[in-house]
Length: 218
Image (cartoon, rainbow, N blue to C red):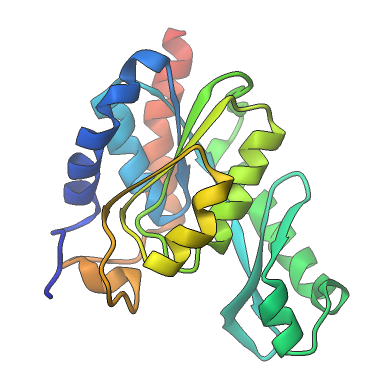
């Protein structure tokens, strides 16, 4: 099967059609930076909804950082793949240096993206977490647990394309999981886009201009 979407904007417009039912619930759209923020900004426009950014970082295995064995979100939220840790004979303590480094990166990015803008209060609100795809599901779990810790009343995870194992792993951590496509053979998120160019910090910062306008109008 070839690509399903031209680019992230095309995917966002298609995904937004499944999210219109939340328009009247005053949702907060949280874009998972970097790539998810491109979709989230477009979805927020389509739903006339509040927009904010969320930074969650994958925790890679020592010597193989691409092999995710966990994920962290702000405020100390941590999720680990215990089976992966056991297979590598690792503990969470063994990852402490990586966790510290990625915690600093979360703080750096949030400071850059938000500048002086305060995070939107999500307590007792519907939160729609948006990413450009769901692979292992570990970062999405960290994101969901973070917004629940903040008091979100209803958590939706939405992505254009999801791996089936990732969707199964995430299922119990969200109130609803919305995927346009869940291919039987997944491989990687990028293979489902014609254009999956890397999103820069500046592009995420630019998308936050919509959030700032909404804040000023409130």
